Image (cartoon, rainbow, N blue to C red):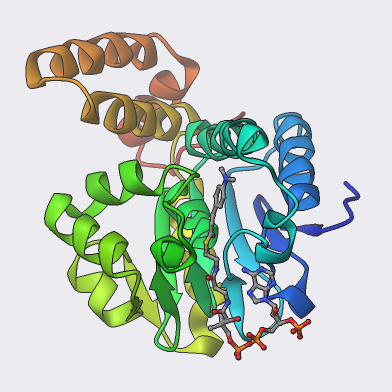
Length: 259
Ligand code: DAK
């Protein structure tokens, strides 16, 4: 895979995608969004990929937001389209059947935090700073931030972070449930790889359907959520993964799940 603003590499069955615009602190310009879109199309045909880590290049930033320089040239009429394009890409990330981990290695601001929140887990370094500063620019979050942050942390914290536009430490964000793990900077990628490796030993279909059940069920009432869970349970129950997982347990061996 070859992109202007992204680098993709594999460590066995785990992919690492790096947003690579270090001079602009990896800010999301239209090219990054376009490259993410192409990446998402191509990654679906990667064989044997069990988890994806997203990070930013350099030591300073995960992603310092949407590209402010580019924003000057966007008209209000184009802004809706611009927002919807980004929202579609971020939704596709959220809907990937494999687990995704945002490895936040510095500033995750505005669109950068919105990108991290589209992932399943946010692992951040002790020195990382997270925030939604859009209101300082006379904007509001446009890539799902107002929706996903409230779902992560509740409306009180979401209002506090969004309306102040302040930046917060990884430790504070972990207390709020936004960040799942905080690490030393040198331990960030090893920690993410360890988390990804632990998930990648499990049934790929089980992982995909459990993720779907949590994500889709979250917006339903409990009865509808239970019904979704039962439907997905029946789907996994009929699968080769279930047959292999149960057989492996009874034969006292490790399961061998195929894609
Ligand atoms: N966009 C473009 N360039 C950026 C950038 C950004 N978001 N953030 C940093 N850079 C560039 C700087 O301009 C600088 O470039 P040069 O001047 O060297 O050419 C270089 O990266 C290094 O940055 P600094 O020199 O500023 O580095 P510092 O360590 O001093 O400061 C900082 C780091 C992260 C505190 C600071 O760079 C900063 O405040 N950056 C801006 C953070 C921010 O406000 N981000 C934008 C949030 S708003 C939309 C949908 C979504 C959105 C918008 C519209 N539509 C639907 C239309 C989302 C909006 C946002 O994300």
